Image 1 (cartoon, rainbow, N blue to C red):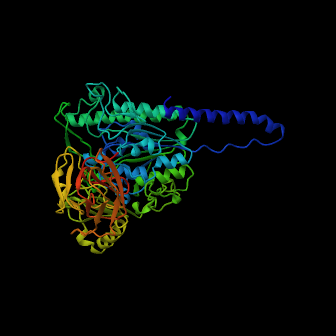
Image 2: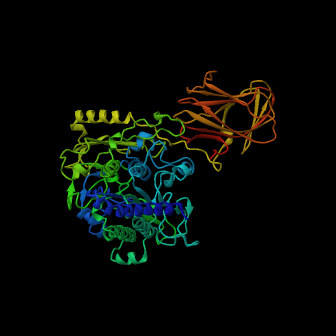
Image 3: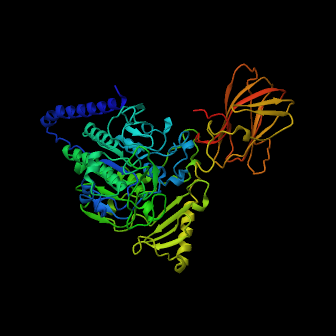
Length: 635
């Protein structure tokens, strides 16, 4: 039996046993004159529904005259529409990292989407971070995840290892229709097992979400439902395209069709809550992971157009996905909890996706102010997570009107993307009605958002004191952030490796021949030395992975330097004993107790002989690849 359904079955049996026990004991209590104890109120369910690349203006309740979204609109009609809802980044992965952890992703170095080489290796939400699913599970909730994950596909990073009992997931999204050759959605999983799914992925995700609710309707549950539309690829079902035949622009027509499918499946979830009598005991969030990428085209050769173009609208905001202008980070943000939140209201003060975790925990009766990230499971070193404070706010007192202050005095953003292009790096801070922003190549600008949501009137020249004060506050916030975990220099894969560039210099007692797969080092004396090309900046302590086959003799040493012009001191070294029998390859993983380093030196033996080296890989304290000089990282 699938282990996830076994868990669900166990919970149902346990719930039934509890009910039967209470029924059997009731007559005994009555005979003895005891009052039957009142059962505690059931904790509310929590559902977080996430759209992908949805523009601020692309819902009916947000003012769109084209998007048909009657089901999503009911969340606003039955609850609160937050008109100043923000995410923590204008891009998919970092935004989801903030949402899932309840902390600004910059605190743990999750700066931006990873380059492809990184995504295939060590990328993911750091294991120091406790997810909302783990917290809800600890509070007694059944936890489920359906849809796009995009927070790591290596085994420790997968959603079923991050607090979710049941998962039906795609590693990175970007897929709607089944593959034309196989007839199934590519790269889709139920737990760790691949699945053969023939449906349009939006429909499949809606079906699975409804099934999860059905299985857990008798116990409190947390469901994270992450749809793909209206993210690329721009693909709509024929029946939905036909509904918008009057729209002349094929790209816009396609997006509207995708949104119709999204809305239908949100409707299936809401209908299931009503059918099971759970609507008034379920807290529902709906939001987007970032603003719409209006006009950004991507190749799409299988469609009726060469490039699929998202036609999202962020009106009246300026900017798009990738910007720290309002159009990149201000998103539709709807909250429903019938009977607890006032229906059909709007809330105009700034709220954040960071608020979802503490709000959900508060609804579950958990004091989130005492919660912090876990210790690093490998190093027990809390310095890897610079700040340990949950950063969101419980929104319930604010949305109900019990607290009339603002949930946040200040919101800050940092976005260093694209990697290696600092002229395009951005940052922003919002304090009250004011926003100071450095967006891409634009100058530092100050806007009064209440009167200028489109950010067209730069007041920085007229408000120099305000600019200085807000900048100082931003810098104080940024000082608590980590440097990005991945950047301009990414791990080298075998397909792109350039082994000839791995050695900076070697001593006269080490004659090196470099091939595509190994370093052949002929040691001619007692002190052969190899100095490797510089390593990118990273946080230690480090581990060094080596693969060696040797017929030399004696101990080997690894030295590290912490200055740009390498200096290797005895106290900055480790010694190990290679197997010098030369019969087979041996793997070695060495712990380097350095907080930072710039260069490495390997002394592979202390006597003459041939040393062959097929792997030289440096990893940081989390097991993230910092540099590959030769070979491939160990799993």
